[in-house]
Image 1 (cartoon, rainbow, N blue to C red):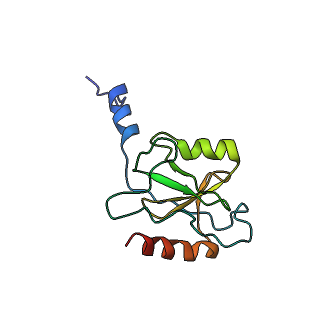
Image 2 (cartoon, rainbow, N blue to C red; image 1 turned 90 degrees about the vertical axis):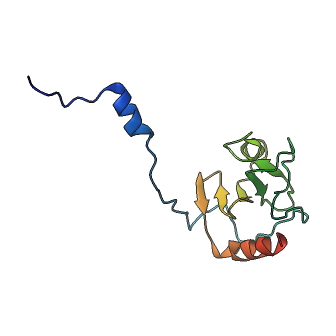
Image 3 (tube, helix red, strand yellow; image 1 turned 120 degrees about the horizontal axis):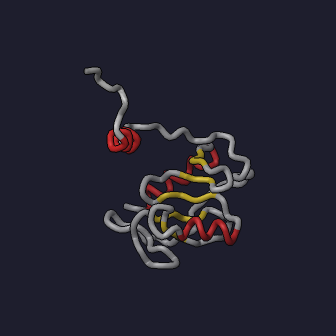
Amino acid sequence: MTQSNKTTSSEQMNEDNRMGPFVVEPKYDCPHLGDRAYILLQPNQTNENQQPPCTDCNKTQENWACLHENCEFVGCSRYHQKHMLKHHETTGHNICLSFSDNSVFCYACDSYIDSPQLQGLSVQLSRRGR
C-alpha cells in the first residue's frame, strides 16, 4: 500500500485559515496628505474606557476620526458597521485616525500611512485621553 501525499479539503482549509504574525508596512509617501498640518478637531470625549461614539450609530469601539480639514466625523471601522468607509465613499475624505491604536489610514491609497505631518497628532491624541 502506498501512502498518498494529497491533503484533504478540510486539512487545506485549516492551513488556509491559520493566521500568523504579520507586519503592516505603512506608506511614507501618501500623496493625499497634501502639505498641511493635521490636527484632530474632536472635542475631548475619550477616556480610558471609551472612545468617542460613531456619528451614525453611537457605538464606542473600533472608531476612526476623519482628519479632513474642518470635518468632525467619527465612524466605525471596516470590521464593524463600516461608517468611516461610507463617509469616505460619500465625501472623498481619505485620511482617518484610529482611536484604538493611533494609526492613520488613507482610503485612496488603501494603506496605513506615516509622515512627519502626523507626528504631532499622536502626541496630541495621547494627551487628550488623560
